[in-house]
Length: 201
Ligand code: MN3
Image 1 (cartoon, rainbow, N blue to C red):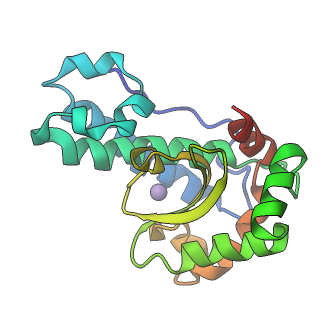
Image 2: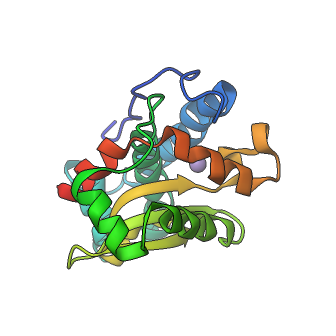
Image 3: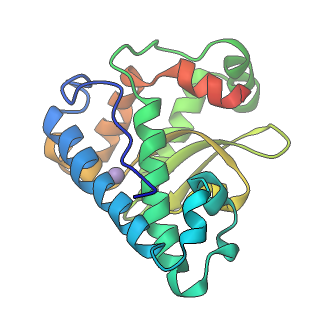
């Protein structure tokens, strides 16, 4: 199959206590695996897309044949968004952004604390299911925003740097209805080196 479920760079238990092992296991091996399988199924009739990267596909969904476009948007988004989410997390959280990324965050949002407040607000105010994002615009400036369902910033001409999954399946086993508590806790496991690498790329 052209799209394969990416392996996690840490054990299912590694993100505890912020995200429990059962949530990581189900989220990765069931939810993300299903998006992966359904993305492959959606593209079966159009094998020419098997040679493209998921980034290329999501950047220009208008090139995807109309009969599978919604399936590719939803499952391709689910495939890519989760890959970014897991890459952004680490059991060895470094605490705060550094270098050029820290400078850009401070100058854009007025500091790391207001940045975190705005990210948490983006996640909290996303009604239903979706994602909170720190993305880079084409002029390299930063933007905090959210998307619904599995919609991806790549399809809006943005480069995603950091994401927080706010679907209930991302936090319900441990936090139940307390999305705010999940959002507040996740800062302890963000891999700021990874986010900075994406910013500089
Ligand atoms: Mn999810």
